[in-house]
Image (cartoon, rainbow, N blue to C red):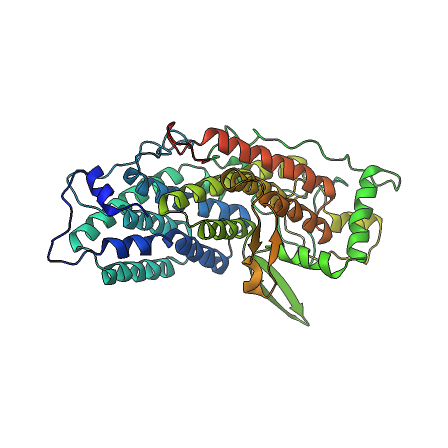
Length: 449
């Protein structure tokens, strides 16, 4: 954590040492070091509780982290604002140079201000904020500085919220449902819940970095065919056999990367649901682990979260544009229709078209950004799923984890191989685009991000 002294020099205001009211600079800096990790954890908890779909979850992670970055950046002259880099984001308000502020507080308040308007459980987020401010006061901060810092955080948060309201999300809530096609190759609702298609208009959401939803199109998948000698039939047979002959390791991999936010279970006449982390939440957890392991200061942590969150969000927009353009049949439907009527996948099939694999796209996008930041030979332990009773998994790189994600979807019986392999390539293109277009550091800086 950069010293508060530098912050005050930047803002051209007097230092606070010698004041009667306690102001614990070292304590505040130490406490603030991990706060973005804490707050992304809070956000994940609420996203699980509120049962947001994966595309919506990716949007929810992005805006608060952008707000946190923007509120903190004025204390770090080496960092660029993201305004004019992210699509439609106008110049963000700057701190009043006549006031004393502690911008790490402003950063968290900006995060909280935005989060509260994107989730359902505002009261829980307000409780987290109240607890945070109580801890800040307990450590020791002048009340005037705290007041100014909160006000600036709110100002940045409101600016980001105003920008978020123009991304098309609200308008897509009123659009028509996806129309089910009768064509033999088209997606159909699947067991057990036969839910309607999720977010058929997500491609209309404004991207963060991409020029358009269609900028990073996947390569063409295998042409549909029901003939037993066809390539498509062979791909279906691969899924069929993997599920029929699954082993303990493949089963574990499928469940580890399931990340279905709302799994249904039926016992007799009773159906109940269990909520879990979303795919973007899983990669934000991996990001948090890397930030913690490398002891990044708060500004570098904010930068890393922004890069990952925007790559994942644009990954969903890109993927969903392709999903509803191709409207591809799921293995569950195809195999029961042409191979074995009694076959069931291991994982519950998500309610949207098959190609490309969303988890593959966003995992590759996130892994590409994280590799750029931490290197290609970054070994790590993913303990994300311990919360639901699954053991940790070890990887030699972020890319290795992203590849396993694709395999997990095939092992689970919910995707054909091209959706995962080509989805991986599509996500890599999105991640590389984010790296090339989103410049967080000024030219003199040599850091990777």
